[in-house]
Image (cartoon, rainbow, N blue to C red; front, side):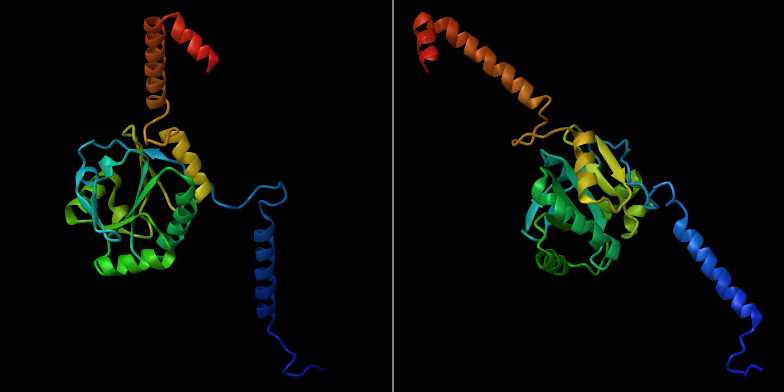
Length: 234
């Protein structure tokens, strides 16, 4: 004879067993063949953007330094990220930027779209986290133009895209969050290598090399055998 304490309604037992079976199946699915259940890394999507787009040409203020800047003036790839300091996904993305920034020739611009993120709040956030890139406020005109080019998502901090602007004027968007290693690979793929002066190596360094060769050839012709002798001894 069982007591009331030991009696469990049959339907509850079946419910628990069924839930356990489903959980076990869910845990096993996709693992037998070694496949990962993680979502694939976001890939860049090219966006047709005018060179005189307001968000590229507008004068913005870096609240951490009070310096004015424009996205279009950068001589290296620029990452533009609309965010709010209270957005957990944004903070996670910024941590990836923090891992990327010291090792990549890139500029990062965090533009707040949240009215409560005043300059002091932005400065405190950047200083507390040790971030050294640019932080500013997206004006109404800049926000409106970003919406025109990238959609309404730019005004939703958790869903806003990561925007990559290359020195060759190519513009791309990625769904966040993008980890530092993948983002560095994307920058190399879509923007190409950038030399220390900020210009594209495939064009800048090539032109410089040709100019240098031409100059050396001219000097050699004008100087004659004496110069050749000096060069060879050096």
